[in-house]
Amino acid sequence: MPNSLTIHRLIERLNSGDVTSRQATEACLNRIQSIDRELNAFIGFDSEEALTQADVADKTRANGGEGALLGVPIAIKDAIAVKDHPLNCASKILGDFVSPYDATVIRKLRNAGAIVFGRVNMDEFAMGSSTENSSHGPSRNPWNIKHIPGGSSGGSAVAVAADECVASLGSDTGGSIRQPAALCGCVGLKPTYGRVSRYGLVAFASSLDQIGPLTKDVRDSATMLQVIAGVDDRDSTSVSEAVPDYSSNLTGDVKGLRIGLPREYQVDGLDSEVKDSVNSAVECLAERGAEIIEISLPHTEYAIATYYIIATAEASANLARFEGVRYGARVNGSDPQEMNSKTRGIGFGEEVKRRIILGTYVLSSGYYDAYYLRAQKVRTLIREDYLKAFEEVDLIASPTTPTPAFKIGEKVDDPLQMYLSDIFTISCNLAGLCGISIPCGFSKHGLPIGLQLQGRPFGEPDLLRCAHTYEQATDWRNKKPKLD
Amino acid sequence: MNVDLSRVVRLARIELTSEEEHRISPQLAAVLRYVEKLKELNVEGVEPTAHAVPLENVLREDELRVSLTQEEALSNAPKTVNGLFVVPKIVE
Image (cartoon, rainbow over all chains, first blue to last red; front, side, top):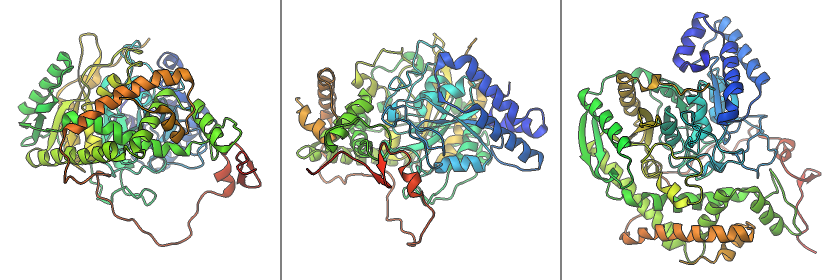
């Protein structure tokens, strides 16, 4: 079925006339119809509008038109603005908000001919690691529906892994693309901070957020990045660094590539099956000529504490805009302050409230220096660790997550335990690196395991080349979850 | 570690139910105890990082560009009158 194809296979078949974009889009819609009641990846979609876009793509192709994603159905995390469609960030507080404009990444997807369809589930305002913090209810892992799919871009990962779409967009603030990709067995790329415009992405922590693709293989990841990357005058933090040709760099050759293994990543609580799978993956790369070097990132144990101060502080400022005046839901009060407080008390879910309160606390008078300023200084130390390591190595390999997907409900009452599961992914955002998660095995219970590679800022070409070489040497990508 | 929750929720403008307060208070205390570990580090002389990428002012010509119309900008507001946002009375 065309919904299970990669972007590059689908494009081949669309070009040869074997299949139309309408058929591919219908196949995705049928797949959603048959399995999404169980998986809950989609918050909403407009079948008719999707098919209209598909017909336009088919006509364009028939008239000789081209596009890197011409006719390819792509699902979008519910944190990215799509003109004339609802945008909720899986929160009640946005009420019946409808986006008045397209995010830059959406405009770029459309220019490349993509069928932009369907809003996928997430942790509310991207705060969470399991997609359980959604006003739309949790998404479920397609490999075992009793388990979480990861988060916050859980819906994006489930939709790709379960073939409900061909590829999707997510966003990553501390692992929110890579972690669900690892737990659902697909490829998730967090580009370097500034590589992709954030215009139209609802801000969580502005110095850490980055949009990226979730795909069925590494080549598709390169294709998607090619389309969405680049400087944007609507995002002053996007960077004008030239965008290289990512796909032509997928040579399958890693000879001489230096891969670092951080000593400090041998943490307590690292699952033995995860450890073994990642070690085998690293051996596989060594057999193909990569040089493996032990490195040290001495401030690793401080990353989570640093992150949860900086990210919550930024979130408390960014989410101040949801006050019941300019958009979204409102709960009435006798004065503006009461109206704001009631609106926010009822509109936000518990994890979002927890984080806003924590962020407000660490920024408040008397605590700013002790928490926020200190965390920003430790962020410097963490970043310096990485920049130093990248003088010796080209990439850093590790597990994406310390364990395979945990059970739904297992960690909801203990936020700190939930935060600790982000240990391997968080530093990448703090240091402004790029990172990717690719499948590297399964636990004995059949749950996917992810290999994470991290690269220096704007090091996506090496990152993708190495990920692609490993992927092509194994056949993990051909395994599919059994769903009806 | 005790957090004066009432002060913080007032600053954050979030009304909590007493049940939520009971649940969130110890959770926050646990997280704050955990982040105390940053105090183990000597950060004297270390510059803070606000952004992973060095930032400069990004300027452009001060020229008119197409943007949302007033109607579009107000289209998602819970309450408007005559092209304005409406809020509860502030001054008696």
